[in-house]
Length: 465
Image (cartoon, rainbow, N blue to C red; front, side, top):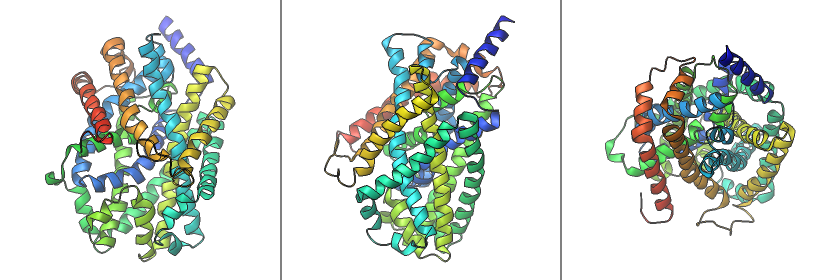
């Protein structure tokens, strides 16, 4: 009875700081966080660059093992403590390691969301131009580099995208975050499937489908694993504080394991559809030219507009693609921003409005650096990288692995498997319990540490991956 009363008390407290209406709202919100620029923009160009089907195979294996373990861990700790990442770590200790472990998970989204909003602004700009009938202009040689170098224009689109994100955040968890994702996610899926099916029926696209879906072990390298691991963190919102925060918003009757599986399926499905939209299109356009295929981040904003311009009905497909892309960017940005605002609410004991105002300032400052980094501030480099590239490297290659390591050690050394098991089994059968134990205890910390060191060594030029 005492435990039940305690649960009700913590549920009531959680309700004051926001909560989801149920499992569907939670799953769609987490999926909205997971399905974003990582799936539609980042995943296809990494898959194209690092071996197509080989990259996909490695990514799938990592998602159902490491991804599963880390999603369950963060969600369970969030629901157990009814806290975001900082508060969750503090519940188990007040010393420096616990402060560091919580804050490394909490700061990641605060750095990511500003440059995420910059890229979201690029997407919004392209969508508006396609709606205005300017497809040929977007496909012109040098248009995208000229656009991101035009500091004033980029800053404007960045601010417009950010405004919508903050408007949703101020509306709250159930009325803002959950309501928007419930509308956008189904539309996103329909648009993504529509574009993918159309692209795959173009002449020459089948070779791209084969390259993306069939693994060729000759294409395997250690960098395939490094890139896939980094993408897994980015795509599944691991070590961003999002899963801790959203876990704290759910009730004890939400099936954590089932919800995790649904997020895995949703995220991987959209990532694969993203690959089937972009890689076959590039094959159809270039005849499988590897230089075009490995163009990297520019694949979406330079190569695709050229493809759409030379495709029958290309403008309609382009509008569908960039509308879907915009929805994906918005749902992710909203989720990442929510984690940041919740942390400020919890740790600084501020209202939602004041916490959002702080994030407005952080987003404006760091986002402006990213927006202007290809323009008036192009001459300023950090480790040879422009601001946006540096923030991406800092969060994905360094801070996220460190945050994931902190979560692993928190469970292994302090919380213990027993408490995690009890939390998950309140509402879940925990079918993958043995896999969870094995990977968390023996593989996750070692592999994450190797990936972290490899990424740092590669950027510093100590090794070439």
